Image 1 (cartoon, rainbow, N blue to C red):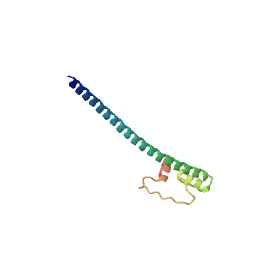
Image 2 (cartoon, rainbow, N blue to C red):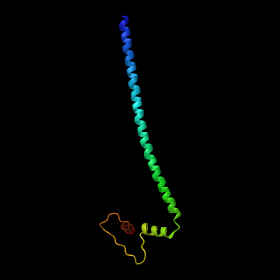
Image 3 (tube, rainbow, N blue to C red):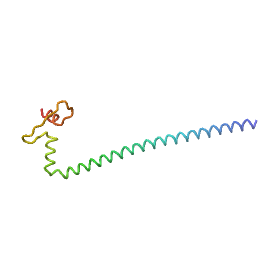
Image 4 (cartoon, one colour):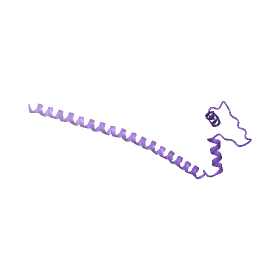
Length: 108
């Protein structure tokens, strides 16, 4: 009779140990996936930060050059659609993204 009780205890202990091994394995697997996802997010955010720093640098350069006549001319041409006197602009109607067309359409 004691042998049966020992076998039952041994079986119960084995089941508990196997359950613990499986539980710990699942926890490690979930943490590994979580770490992988966090590392990917970290890389994405780092690339966004680099792009934003580059944009900031370009904007700072643009601010420094804002007093020059070339900057004023660029803004007048690109943003306002202005042209120099006696200057002829040819517009390709087949071209979809033409900055001069968008300025002309916005004025109408």
